Image: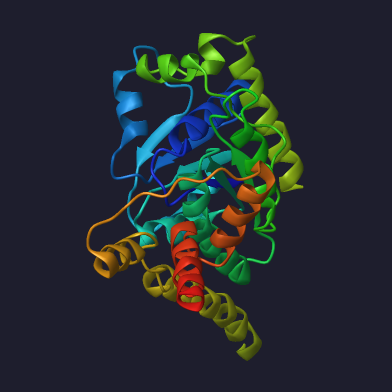
Length: 209
Length: 88
């Protein structure tokens, strides 16, 4: 399965979600490859500062060849996760075209909501090429019971793509884990953040079938 | 023999289409740059208007603007221009 985590807006939570989902899959014993398609190379930096052995492989490939090259690589892995590039349309289209499932993280903020339209357009165009392709929004960095967090779901519904009920919440542990070259799955396996990530994964598996 | 060739050709053509889309798919115009520039150009010095709206109405307005690829400020400005012209 190839999962692309994309949003044309930077800071939407792509890398955090991609890394933690990869860790959750690896914890299930799956062979996971994480493709860092972001020229900022955050996922590669994360891998570089990590002290322990990597629970999954991380490769940087911020070029529009993902749709061409990844299908052949997918035979060697249970899952390939693409951490998408913001802004670069060519790389984003390539990542989306490569994917079986496209996951679009959106923060409950006006700026994220506005920017998500462009990403949705790309995903809908791609569905024209790949009829079996699935896609979904995931709300990222939800802030408690704020009004915005409640409203973002209604607003996103207008785009007519599925919205996962699982979401990530604004929690210090995500940043702490990232800074330490770890994931929330390892930092606090029984903590609420790890539960959030596993819930997203479980829903993605449902979407995939 | 010939049917085998067709079998090879079809996926190749499909890949070509995807390839074309990846390389050349029309990128939407930058969503914020243009309206900002035009708003600035229109009035010279800017003044700020702040209003309180019911939450639901605000959310609906925001969503409708996004769906129509416009900005709240553009629509409000347009309304104010139209209304002012009619009533002055």
